[in-house]
Image 1: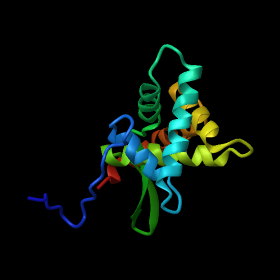
Image 2: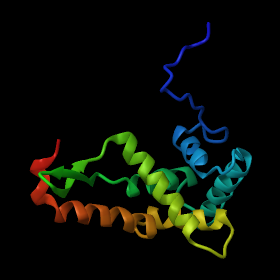
Image 3: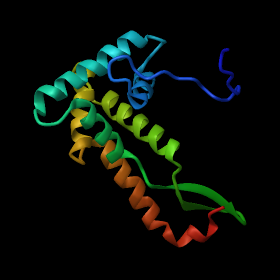
Image 4: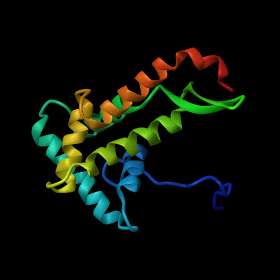
Length: 157
């Protein structure tokens, strides 16, 4: 008997090579115009490049650690109070942390020009793995913004 899903739930399968849901989500974020095969090729090529550069660690482990390093713990959200808008720091839920990390990694990779996408992605993943690079900087900036607006934390809803 087929399993039923709520209309808001999206069923997703793990990626074919690593059986990882995180990799599958990343590939879906990378995909443009429904070209999943192309997105998979770019992702797997990037992991092969990582494998050549980092000998002692599995490429999937580098990928997972990179995403974990980019996940924001706290962010600011606008809250309107009596005619004034405040940037209120709030904790980020787990699923939003993951989607923000994936989005920032892809934005950072797409922002670099002049190289094949697989190479740009591999470089950004390695940078994030080493706690540096554009996506990691974005996370740090979000955290700094939240720290700077800590005074408005009592407005959190």
